[in-house]
Length: 94
Image (cartoon, rainbow, N blue to C red):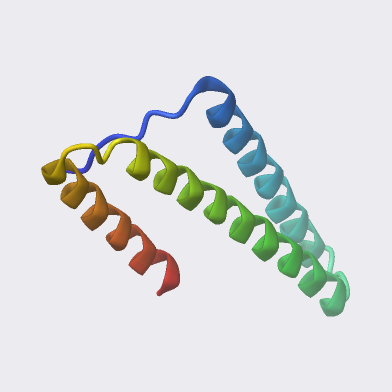
């Protein structure tokens, strides 16, 4: 069973704000496509969203690493957290 990652209020709020910004960017791309905007303009927005998602992913990974380091005091917990971390990184890289 996966351990639940409890984020402090400000950290969670910052992540939600970033996701809402990304959501707005994607909605903007959708409107651009619906209005037959120039493909190069659409692709520029796609590049922007990809960068925002990459940055968001890196923030989540960093947070996970920080928690891994803080909560790996016992060897058995350390192995469990390490397996979880490696699975997450494999999914991110794939």
